[in-house]
Length: 258
Image: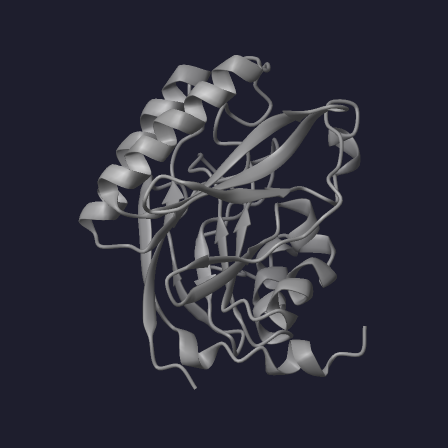
């Protein structure tokens, strides 16, 4: 059994003011993650160019990928960038994985779209696992991680120590404003995060933007379903966690008959 540990960083940052601002903010956070000796830094859903923002076009995104890759190389950190990309059918919500040397490891497209996203985006079809040194990880994006447990189990059954969960969740008018993680009075979302880890014996790392009154925050859940750490609600910054890869056995995921 592995006794290695890996330091991960979750970029709990404000929603960017513009597409250009999203790239600047990402570059700054990558540099900060490198200084903190993180092995991986993960951003919220569609952080570049910003969730719900007008599309800046394919040329902008391709250039942004190059800038992010250069930042990853300079900081020597693997980057999971919540973004979007253009395919033949149109746009997809995706996560770009950049190795610490600046090379592109691949994309994880969002396979299970929220119904509200279907007019703007096309769904993906394939799931992948990625590596960062000894760390093996999967990615489940927002809606699919909350509501479709199989998206997390797929990765855990294939050796993922942690499943990263980039999401975007802001307060609705008059909604409950939590101060404690998985508060029973809050929505089901953070309770689902606990379940995703416990039912698969893997870490679950969920990352949201920092916003006033947000119903969810960035957090890392242990493989036994208990909370390792979380970011104070609405507070911008990197959430750092050292995870013990030996604890992430994937035992329950591998025993599931699916």
